[in-house]
Amino acid sequence: MIFNQKQLFLGSTHIALRAETLYVCKRNPQGVATLETEVPYEEILPVKAGEYRHIPTNQLLLTGLILLVLGYGPWRELLLTGQPSAPLYGWWAVFGVNALAAWLRFEQQWCTFRLQTAHLAITLAGRPWQRKQFRALATELERRTKTYLRDEYGQVNPLGFIEPQLRRVAWLHELDVLSTREAQALSTRLTGRRSTDPLKGMGQELESPYLN
Image 1: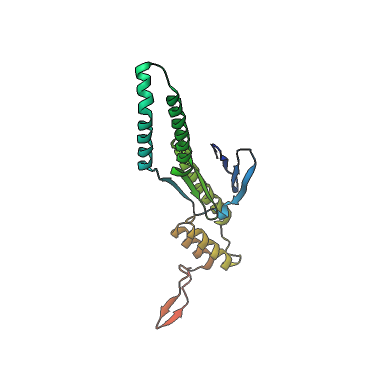
Image 2: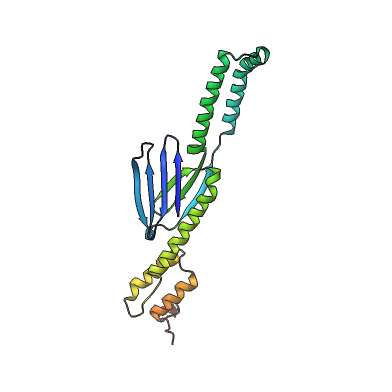
């Protein structure tokens, strides 16, 4: 899966889900890579995806009111004479600058997407038409990461060293790759015990019973 986004004056962001890694590349407007990294799926979880909106409504209303006041005279003159004046051209220039500034702030500050992993945080422009694709990216990243970890580390061998395998099972359970039931079943297969928690009787720790 691939996610691409270009931002005016900031460059582009390319995100790709590869077979064993998450690839991220940020380029400036000249096309030079300012950030390029590959993060293995072992270092991804947990995945957090969010959308953040901080639109300054009062500021926008004040700007609109100022534009109305500034444009009253030039527009009135246009309606009376039918001829555009120099102040009207100036008003259009001010309006264009404010519209461009509002669009840039909308993309870079007011509305953003944020994708965060265990060791990486990516901020993107919060474009409404890319919301569905962004959510699909986050969902697919988590699904693919858990599938990869389950396939690569979710198998145990009772004939091998037990302690490292128990730690690996606990790690997968902590990352929510394995459910509690699955982790318990794998631990039982490794140790022959239903639970690794020590039993206590008469104030002393007892050996956990083995399963037949």
